Image (cartoon, rainbow, N blue to C red; front, side, top):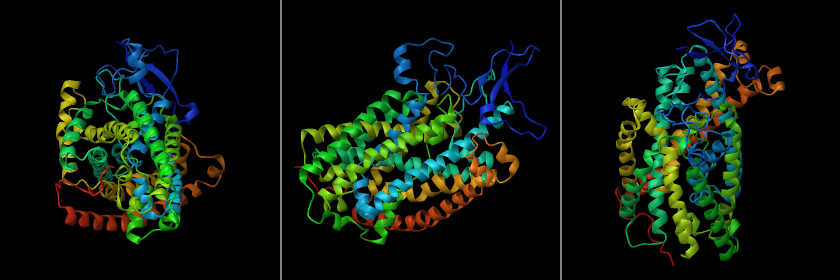
Length: 509
């Protein structure tokens, strides 16, 4: 049987055509007749029923039910928006009020807005590198990795893109950082579930609740990939929207306290500022390229990313500011905003919706870590009944660490300070500069910059990248790590490890 592969018309110099010219030119390997049609080569190839991503919907070779297509097949621009909105909201909605009190309201707002633009910029750089790698591998007939040469089985990850353009040591360094980032965020979800529930029911200690909810979270390690998360993302976004406006309403009902803005307008200490900075200006991309890999048209991912970031910030800023104005003292001491709000039926509903969202966020952040584990033990191309259970050792490790160190905001900010500067900014900026340093490579770029920047030989892009890399290296990696380590040591000294209760003084009324 003839096999169809993707080939490119390149010049003698090996120049890859521009994005608009990038058309799939199928050739029959064991025949001479050219194929009549062309297919956009930027689109992710149709997956077979045995791939990690599952069947792609009506365009696949096997018909599936329309319900499955509507609720599970997540491979469009809207799915990119849902994925990014869901992953960016849940991690910060409950902890940003506390971190804004650390940085000060005005500096915190500036950091949030600046971080949104910076993370969108570095995501654009990463997307270009992802597409350049994809184009190169397709040109060498190395993209499709199944036995037929027509399907893509592997899930592209951050460290693989970095290693493709850098050295092997850089790939291992990037893999270590993304692994730490994903591990820390997974731990935060275990702790958040227990902390949220404890704010409405103090019958059990937080440690017991972490054991209970950690066990429930194990079920979400069996989600095959991001393409099966459409309905979960919709549920998560509904839950976070309800919770955000509940916090705003409860804060307004409590009333703005006299001189509240003056109390939290500026940082209370240098250490508090850099701890808050680690969360408020977090531009991490530890799970972004797995999201890119789910789309058929990967070039449009940046629009979904920008839309998701914009929606997340729109939803999170209002409750963060109003909570600081209504509870200026309490929010400085309690790292989970649920801990300062009085018990009510609305709060109970919000807590349960956020717990459901934490389950979903656990999948969003732990799945890439599980993909790494699958590749390490070589189960990533096996049947689902082998591949999915093989994930349990890593999931159990996340559960254990969550019970050991239940310092919610402290864990969040520490892992952000350690990993986000490199994963989110330093590596993308410097790697982009290094790869596209020559004119020939600039002409091969799959997404060409704005024409005036091309006229300036890309120097504005390079200078901006160097500035951002230096800024994050000093502010995050230097000061951020130091003050976060001080915070963790202080918390461990005060509460110990495996504490039965952490920040349990506040009782719901």
